Image 1 (cartoon, rainbow, N blue to C red):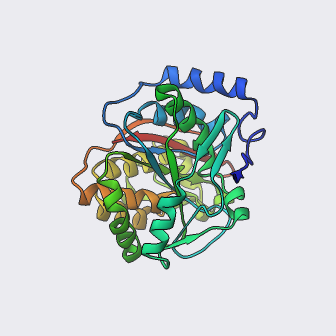
Image 2 (cartoon, helix red, strand yellow; image 1 turned 60 degrees about the horizontal axis):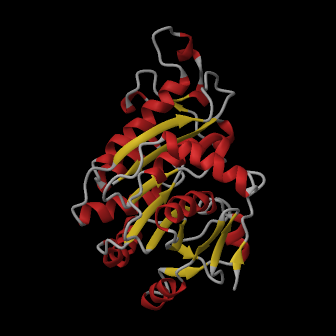
Length: 310
């Protein structure tokens, strides 16, 4: 039995099973609770000190009854490549609470169907990446508590794509999407703002049409009637959330082109919107939103987090 170690336990979240269980239960108890039929989720993947509460809102919504598999799509943070890759050698993902099984048969089926589309990642790439791992304790806790069993996962890491690739990927995933024994999870943070992220776009009015780059001057911030930076970030993120809630793939792509908002899981989220749009699934509902800090200076930085279900 090969187990992917919980490489971020003890740093990004506690490695103590007792402390982690208590922490998760506290956050989950403060969230809305299971929502009948909710099997499509969107949630962040930052350290729990920043994003734990928001991620709890995501998993609290999950209707775990009847779910046998979870397709979780997230971005690559360390390796740039074309297309997507999946877990290769691991049978389980470790969490301090228990192990989450990997659906190796479904992964083999996808690779056999299209080996150019679906490739396998190395163990090193898998262990370095955090976009899947940060979801695993919540998935384990929510499903194991609800029914004493944990569904198998199919992690799909997405890097460089274009519209043609995303449509082809959605086509391959459609039969699984149409099977209500499968859940789909998108692992994504929202705006990464600051010079260290290479993104300092700002809208003084909150409207996309007024976007400017603060790298080229901050005099606008001296006007008393303009938004503070963190409110501008919120306006940009909330517009993305509003567009995504309409499940319009085209509108979401147009938004990304217009704002260049640094939503790290924009491509996985785009694929979900395609799947929803093509299968007449509507009403992506947003549950929560927060930022790691309230930016007021061009020298500051923040990352945004949001939770949603359908």
